[in-house]
Length: 238
Image (cartoon, rainbow, N blue to C red; front, side, top):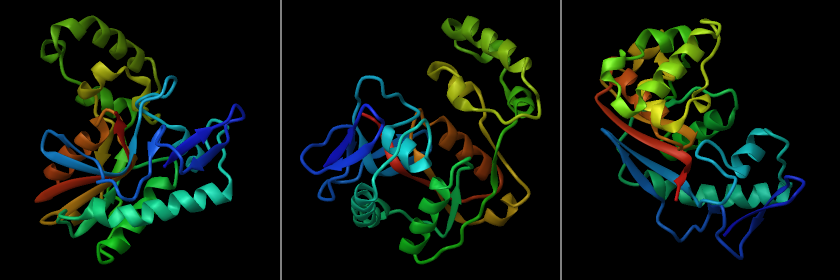
């Protein structure tokens, strides 16, 4: 069970194949390990030419981005599959609070609400903000801590960031994949102390390079979280 995408950017559910997005409710939900956090996903993604690590036509349609749309019937089928897979994705994950990653779209927040209901209506704490360019530069490592083969690219990226408004919101998708581990896309806000002593489920809409969810893990551990797991609607490209 996958999706089709027309030339007019209309995304439709197709039960006859598993191209682009695997929505089969009989399949085991994918899980990936990133440093100290394991991330479960409801849907698996399959690589198709022109798709990239940061997006997918289904996510774009759900967010109303880039001109993509989806008929209500297809949305209903995707929702049905997701609702059936979600408990399986959460199986074995121990958490008592949910923290959604910050997003300009409501998809992550809605997904967090669904996960909360599935997890016994545990509280949702919005204690992360997207970092500004100034914050990203403040925490960027010195050149000596960067892998030698990446130093030229890293220096070029730093110069580009320095030209931006320091108060503007940083977008990780504008950074090339090999350089992403050196930049911090999220920061804890004033609500972060609320998560101290709790087991946290970090929720996001899509798993790309894993940089954002890894950075969020570090920020919340510094705020006192005692355990961390991740959940995304869509997994990494395979």
